Image (tube, rainbow, N blue to C red; front, side, top):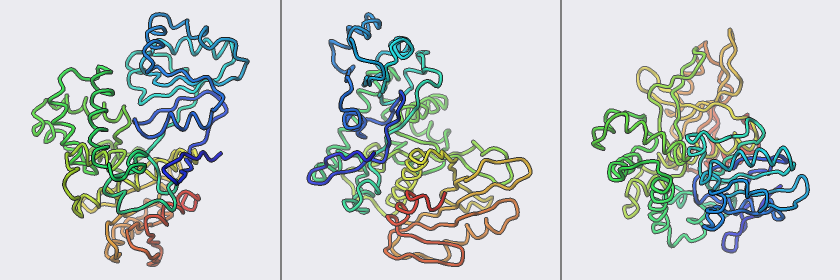
Length: 399
């Protein structure tokens, strides 16, 4: 079911599909979770825990939830927005799912507070979905690559493009106040602010925790905690290093990507500076990673994604394993190289060709993604403009 969200005079059809059973919906603030829920479940009883009176009532007595829902028939939908604000409510949700046969859509910016508070996560009785920023496929004809590289894909940024810088600055402040301070995730704000700026500047880079700790003037263990907060609140993702021939992907030196290049720019404090080509190159990688995550969820394939670095330091931006690893079988992968350029250089194909020439890996597709307008084929390598790549990915042509 395509859900159309109004964006000025254009309507954006979100790819996320509504399950038939109860589900969690997590995602960073401002990605359109509540709007999507109101469109897919127009008849549901909507309970917003940002409502101060409801929050106080249910905090004091979670059993009041049954009375608030009332006499809804079996299989009725109930939306609980900002569910992380009252973790104790989850036991009551579980009970009502079993006794009343009601279906719940449980929405929040992250599961961190639920997990840390030992909340009942329903043990498989509810699916878990995540909402990202707009994808290029969703924006379709309204998608502008240059604008996305500079300002990202948040719905608000596309609804009011003239205010993009102000919106992103406010987004960082709102994240700090509502997601970090209000939820009690950190006690000392100034060190976290220093870390946040550094994390914005290293978007798409391999993590050197010791260097980040020194620059932020905090302990290494504190940096680990800060990164776990960014990841748990879904504003950041780790991309692990990949090695052929190993049964598991290496956890050493992962890369860190923000969920959205505009938010990364805001965190880095670069909203008033024009992004250079290096920054835009990382922004393009961020967009490609986002599209892969969206497709992994929508297609329900959930394939592992990593990056590859040779001992000589040559990298391939993304490796997608297209089949589960099995003893005695070489891994099957897709290799993707991303370049912020209007002209593709054949030399950029060499790392993928070298990897495909090894005996311990089966490279099903070698793909280049760039900012030009033509599709190229160099032997077994296909090179696509970014938007063409996204449409082919979404159509399931690669896996």
